Image 1 (cartoon, one colour):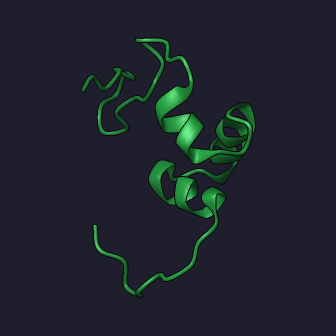
Image 2: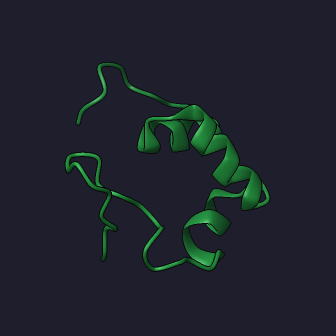
Length: 65
Protein backbone atom coordinates (compact mmCIF):
# COMPACT_ATOMS: atom_id res chain seq x y z
CA UNK A 1 0.00 0.00 0.00
CA UNK A 2 1.33 3.42 -0.91
CA UNK A 3 0.63 6.49 1.16
CA UNK A 4 -0.93 9.44 -0.61
CA UNK A 5 1.53 11.84 1.00
CA UNK A 6 5.21 11.63 1.79
CA UNK A 7 5.74 11.21 5.52
CA UNK A 8 8.93 12.70 6.89
CA UNK A 9 8.17 12.57 10.62
CA UNK A 10 5.98 10.20 12.60
CA UNK A 11 5.89 9.05 16.19
CA UNK A 12 6.28 5.40 17.19
CA UNK A 13 2.59 5.22 18.04
CA UNK A 14 1.63 6.63 14.63
CA UNK A 15 3.84 4.13 12.80
CA UNK A 16 2.48 1.21 14.79
CA UNK A 17 -1.09 2.42 14.25
CA UNK A 18 -0.54 2.41 10.49
CA UNK A 19 0.87 -1.14 10.65
CA UNK A 20 -1.88 -2.55 12.89
CA UNK A 21 -4.81 -0.42 11.83
CA UNK A 22 -5.99 0.17 15.41
CA UNK A 23 -4.63 2.91 17.65
CA UNK A 24 -5.76 1.32 20.92
CA UNK A 25 -3.96 -1.94 20.08
CA UNK A 26 -0.87 0.02 19.07
CA UNK A 27 -0.93 1.96 22.35
CA UNK A 28 -1.30 -1.22 24.41
CA UNK A 29 1.52 -3.06 22.64
CA UNK A 30 3.85 -0.08 22.78
CA UNK A 31 3.14 0.38 26.48
CA UNK A 32 3.95 -3.30 27.15
CA UNK A 33 7.22 -2.83 25.25
CA UNK A 34 8.23 0.10 27.42
CA UNK A 35 7.58 2.62 24.65
CA UNK A 36 10.15 1.20 22.24
CA UNK A 37 9.34 -0.12 18.76
CA UNK A 38 12.72 -1.86 18.69
CA UNK A 39 11.86 -3.75 21.88
CA UNK A 40 8.42 -4.59 20.55
CA UNK A 41 9.73 -6.00 17.27
CA UNK A 42 12.95 -7.68 18.37
CA UNK A 43 13.32 -8.15 22.12
CA UNK A 44 9.89 -8.99 23.53
CA UNK A 45 9.09 -12.68 23.99
CA UNK A 46 6.40 -13.86 21.59
CA UNK A 47 3.73 -16.46 22.05
CA UNK A 48 3.69 -18.54 18.88
CA UNK A 49 -0.06 -18.61 18.40
CA UNK A 50 -0.92 -15.03 19.39
CA UNK A 51 1.63 -12.77 17.69
CA UNK A 52 -0.29 -11.48 14.71
CA UNK A 53 -3.44 -12.77 13.08
CA UNK A 54 -4.70 -12.52 9.53
CA UNK A 55 -7.65 -10.20 9.09
CA UNK A 56 -8.67 -11.57 5.70
CA UNK A 57 -9.86 -14.93 7.02
CA UNK A 58 -12.90 -15.57 9.17
CA UNK A 59 -11.03 -17.30 11.96
CA UNK A 60 -7.89 -15.75 13.31
CA UNK A 61 -4.83 -17.67 12.26
CA UNK A 62 -1.28 -16.76 13.33
CA UNK A 63 1.18 -15.47 10.76
CA UNK A 64 4.39 -17.44 10.80
CA UNK A 65 7.61 -16.09 9.29
